[in-house]
Image 1 (cartoon, one colour):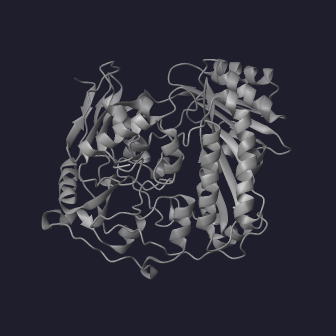
Image 2 (cartoon, helix red, strand yellow):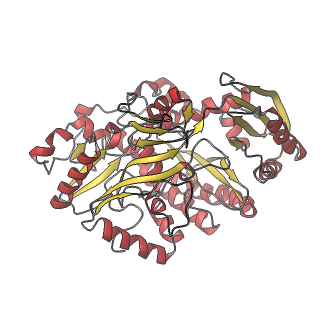
Image 3 (cartoon, one colour):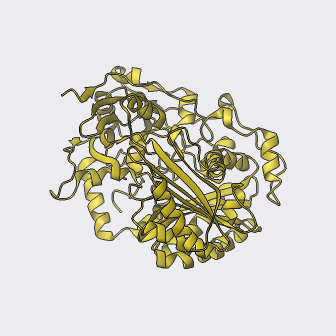
Length: 542
């Protein structure tokens, strides 16, 4: 078919990655800027924690070696082991800064094709070696860290060498893509065909398609197609029991979905190697606007009206007064709603006007004027200010961590009727946990990342001074309080950050027990040796 293309190579876009913190090491804050930030947090440390060199790290000895036939795929280099020890949660960054890499994998594997994955799993199962699937390491829930266990060794399997778009079906507007494709690499291969996946999480440049699928990541769209699930047509997964490949279909009612078993399974049931993904034509028409509110409850009501309107904006981010001030978008106790719409085929100014009118009906005041143009449009200034702050925030978090400032984020989703009480409870109960852990008052902010007709997905940020050497214990106490509060108010333990190991206590309470029995049975059937990402989602026997 003329509109179906097989591709043999991909765009080689592999950005440098920090071994200890977020993203590009060249974007890390210098000591002086870390100190300037910490000065805004009363009680913060006065000097920045030094960043250890790889040479100074004391890594545990390597306990296993790969057979000769696989030796070319694995590395025991200290830099590779250090860079694959943790994800990018606050507690991960702090431990790395303190040189605590006791959890380092023995080896790191870099498969180049699916056959390599199969061979590595066969060896690992026969040798009692735990395998931790690794995309680009942006997990913030302990999803790529081996914790307590009795395995003979640990292998981190880095899929980044499998990053090609293999096939494009232009007629059905979909593509078969290897799971190791980083966000920019994936989009670069689709761009010449006028197509896009349009899935842009905050970690876009430092995360992979397989990671998005394994964690059910939330992406670009604030409404309608919010999760990677919505864009997935079929999966190919390597398990120790065999290869599972689902049939690509636009929809099916043939029993439980095989894809749903592996979406969100976080590498504990199998390793996703390929996926057929639903694509879109690249948007040409875009429009954006920002609306300010004097009262946060009125802003929440406006967003609910937008979510229930059927207008489906691509962007619908509500910043509460604290978040708006922290992002430099607005002050004076005002909340800000950032709206955006887009289309590949039709002008969208009229739809934006309808959305703004809804916000105005609830007391909102549009600011800065809206923009509507082609792909070169940058949007209104408030939206751009928020976007810049959004992309910079992980580096700021790392800078604060170097100053021993606790910076915790957690996200959830609840129904609209429960949100006001949840919002108050987080400020009250998590605030009390911060005082108990640190002796200081916390800055607690909130924004909506995604919204649905029946409820929002609030994302909370908690900032407070910590004590050097005690940051992890403080973070753990605050995290536990946050999970308890979410559970008490029937909110999910996570909307888009996955479960990993850090969310296990909350997930164990949220998950129905019969479903837990089914998951354990699936684990036993697919991974009888128990080598795949042990401790994530559930324990095989309990």
